[in-house]
Image 1 (cartoon, rainbow, N blue to C red):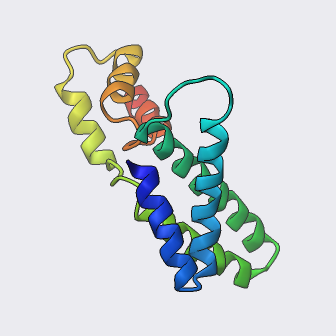
Image 2 (image 1 turned 180 degrees about the horizontal axis):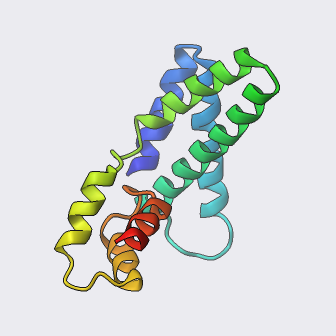
Length: 138
């Protein structure tokens, strides 16, 4: 499972004394444990872990923008290192050209059909807001 790989990478970062990698990986592990023990009884899948990683990645982007705006370049650089530790576990995102090709192959190009297709087949590999923007432009 993906979470096992993340825990292993977290331990390796601990041994290597890589505080930036430890920080971001520990956040993911912590949120995984919260999700696992939330009382719903639902099994936590790799897709759920991937969503957690993506959410942490977005939060780091927002935090980095805040630091950059405040003129704190050193902290922004540390967040880049934290994001790099997470990037190893994220799938390659589809490009705008790839999204256009996929939409072109669909028999029905209506917005609900396009969005449902990408959510079902490319969840975690595509920015859904980009898909929406491209679909509206067609």
